[in-house]
Image (cartoon, rainbow over all chains, first blue to last red; front, side, top):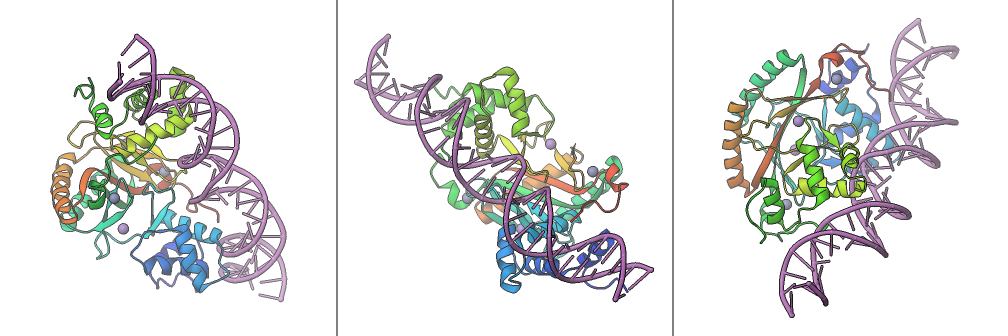
Length: 161
Length: 161
DNA sequence: TTGATAATGAAAATCATTTTCAATATAATA
DNA sequence: TATTATATTGAAAATGATTTTCATTATCAA
Ligand SMILES: [Mn+2]
Ligand SMILES: [Mn+2]
Ligand SMILES: [Zn+2]
Ligand SMILES: [Zn+2]
């Protein structure tokens, strides 16, 4: 009775990759689906505890890694020492967006301007790169790095070495 | 006699940000300039030792961080547990490129196809985003994630949990 | 059911990166 | 140039996010 080809796409992805749909995994995924933040493993763990007080941090880590490996979740390093995770949305979907990253305070801004043109270029690039490098592309990221409004006007010297 | 406004751009960047040009920093930079790999701090350290046997790993970390902060170096997290660094080249320059990242074996491919069109879109996007979010953009990254040639044909189940 | 395998959670271990701190180098200026 | 203030360095110790181990539990196939 497995592989009924129903449920959300990430469940199918799990099945196809040969993994089971478990309570902890479902919980972790639901947390990612219900936020627009960029959560760390610890962040997810804290939220998970509220629903399932017996879940382990280890399992959260494992779930996030697994989701990242099968491509349903994106893992980011914004430079603040801990990985952050975000649901990976289809480039054609509403939720797809890119990032502005402040090099100083590490704050993140999601944006989705020019998505139409961006998707055009990406599709084209994807197609060419897939062929040229025999690479099966699953998703992409675009990050702009710079200084946020506050940090532009903050003290010049930002670091002590 | 400072700020003679000569030397490579990253030296000026250092000065402008209020930092000194030191031997260790010069060495770290020269290592980054003379490779096309994506080196970890440890990688840089090993190469640096060959030139200056008294340099410390700590200093390498500090130099890489500093360069990253002032925008002359890019720091990446390709998912293999250690940060990797690469010289940050001007989008209009020859060396500017983007990345294909294998989600399974973490191998990286640099590519620079469609750079013309890409740069067009980026400039346009940059301009709009700068205004809209009062963000001073210094550089950007584009990453495509997927499976490299080998990994597409490798075993299905890639992880044990 | 039963047996085989996958997934979980607690505790311990790892290890890349950061912090501390005393020593050294550099720049400003008297 | 000599003096003083400040920036940078390297070794050692600490940190802390992530991973590993391992015994237990849940789930699947037959
Ligand atoms: Mn986002
Ligand atoms: Mn590269
Ligand atoms: Zn900022
Ligand atoms: Zn691969």
